[in-house]
Length: 398
Image 1 (cartoon, rainbow, N blue to C red):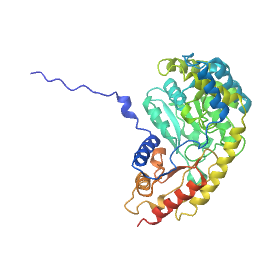
Image 2 (spheres, rainbow, N blue to C red; image 1 turned 90 degrees about the vertical axis):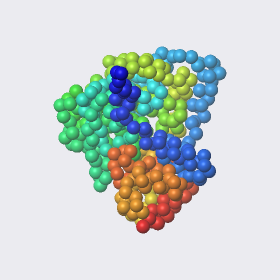
Image 3 (spheres, rainbow, N blue to C red; image 1 turned 120 degrees about the horizontal axis):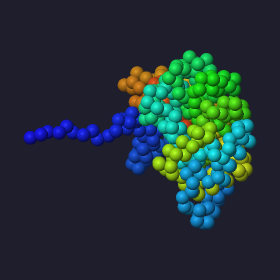
Image 4 (cartoon, one colour; image 1 turned 45 degrees about the horizontal axis):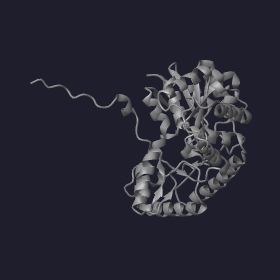
């Protein structure tokens, strides 16, 4: 009897990625809620505000007008026009409509950009700590992640000198997320300009994740895309999720030189096709309407950041850098590793969830092992209760 070898079931590329840590935490929290647990949720990476009324009204009007059919793959011309004009107004960039593509969320813009630009063996420089999906998306494409360590003593700042040292002949791209998730660090304007020069002069693509661009507390929001002389090597990855409190709408975009934008559209044509039609109408309302909500959200987040930092200072042994943007804090909990049988940040976060009923995300998901990420777009009452529970749990460890 001939015995045939069992066929491999799954493609190698699916083994190069893991389930998103933030999604895994959300799923575990949902299970506990279903069992009746009263959780304080510091895990969700989204604003706590309702989507502004004028944005919702635009989507409702589009649905009532039966604007519910397919659109062209990169988005209707009106939404791409709104994207390029808003970005030009706020950041001084210079993109044409055919250099913009509307996507089902900022994550898809990033995924498509990596798939289009990064091939097997290409190196991508990724500062640490990093947003959870960067590493996996690079590895899925077959790229090699070059981790760029940053210093907690310097608030996890990314510098041009550090970027330059990490560049090799195989470097294809550099990812900059400023303000960053999870640490809220911001690349200085001087370092940003130098990094743009480094990338452009060497023919390296600079992928700018601007998800939190409008939540920059260190000064006026900036974009590397304003250096229009380097446009051919810059890809801007944007999102309406945080800026306009539209996380569930899945509204993102990319701005890129024409050859890159054409290939982004080509790839999208074989995956999602167009983003949801009436979401495009909502995005137009967000981008072209009053921007007062953006300023209001920003002011509220600054107040919550300061309130959260003050609450964390009350917990002995917990230290935390002051974020300059986004809406997370990234406290160092190393003083409690080794206590109560807890060896890692993941174990600490797991026990915080199950025993203290506080949702956090462990630092291993972001490339560090001595931190947890706390998302602070919640009420001050939740901050008080959540940090009280954390303090009681941590100080009770032996």
